[in-house]
Amino acid sequence: MRLRLLPALLALAGCATPDAHAPPFAQRGYAAFSRTDAAAIAVDEWRLWGQRVDDTAGAGYVQRAATMAERQPGLWQRVGEYWWEGMNAGEPYDAWTGKHDARGDVFSVAVNGRYAWSAAFISYIMRIAGAGAGFPYAPNHATYINYAARAAHGEIKAPLLIAEDPRLYAPRLGDLICLGRGRARNLTFADLPTRGLFPSHCSIVVGGGVQQVDVVGGNVDDAVVMSHLHTDNAGLLRDNLEPWFVILKVLYRR
Image (cartoon, rainbow, N blue to C red):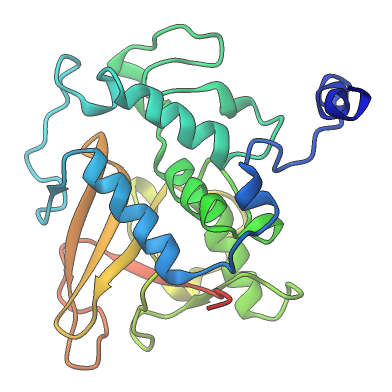
């Protein structure tokens, strides 16, 4: 009885481990951290959200509260799971859902951008795939983009991510492809790492290679959506609508 109560007592005392929200198979590493597993998890989530595809970079998409997928029964709870399992225990974001703040109050569509969950989605995938403590889980993509950039400069010991220039590196299954948004839309690979955070988005590669790669991202059109990106005969990104400026090579164990 005392042993069973210990985790709860530690949590109440503010001593919970950062990955306390992860299931045992992820915490204890039942299987090696695998690119095929990470991609499969992302594809399964995409299927759950209706297998939507958007190759237009969101052109013409209009938010409507009544039809926003992330606010629908069964799906707003799923976003809540991304936050709960993707964030380290004790983060203020871990109680958010697709339409609720940490108090459980429904937020309006007008402030929807404050609760963007695309980074929580990537963090969730990495956590469930077994990345363990080595991944820099965060509510924003810029945190792990800068981490990977510092790793590329040799500033991080035994990193799990390394930033690669998309002009020179062909993305592989399970890698993360990232772009700057808004004021950061014109960021280039040479600008990394930045001094602070910036608006951005990352999607995970789930298939393809020469001529096309398939990526899945969260909070794209307020859902989990697949996009197809153009590549050349060497597998390098070419002639895409969005300014994908960095690839995060994930150092899977297999």
